[in-house]
Amino acid sequence: MSQYTPTTGTITKIDWQDTDPGQLGCALRFTLNSMDQGLIHIIVDGSTYVADNHPLSVGDQVTFFYSLYAPVPMIYPPQYQAVAAVRTPLGTYASLDVFTQAADSRQLVNSDNTLRLNLSQCTKLILPNGQPFGGALSGKLLLVIYGATTRSIPAQTTPDKIIVFCQSQSSAPC
Image 1 (cartoon, one colour):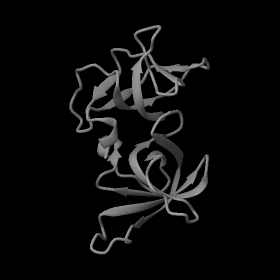
Image 2: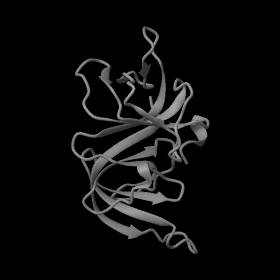
Image 3: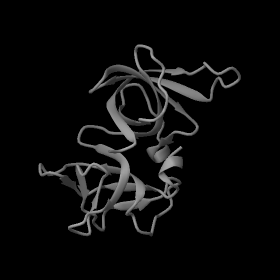
Image 4: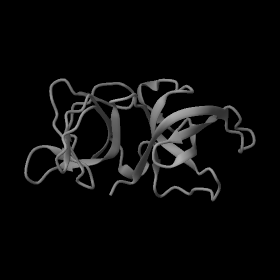
């Protein structure tokens, strides 16, 4: 099971997060109408990885990832600290997980064996800073951005882009 949980939805409001004195302007609170949880708040600060450094706006369809192990205040709507964010317009999906080599093939599978990656020459492999990645992917935390999948178990896809976090899982991506 992945340490990171995704939630996807449409951004309906963006506010400055000002709960920490002296830190006003360093974090944003996104109000998200999520597909799986309804109305939620997501906190994005300087430690949150945002794919392509693309500023997020009201109306954007976005997938945010947050840690299952991070503390969450007991409030409504729920509020999570994002570790990663990806714009996911219709037909685009994202997964943040540690992928390892499948026992029966050279393909990579995520930690709960629900997504198998079929890499192609068109798959962009990059580091979080946008530089190319040239090493082995197995055992690393990957942010996988992809389109269509098969209806098999596990689902299979040819990713458009993979962002590789080389540090240990406990310290990535924030």
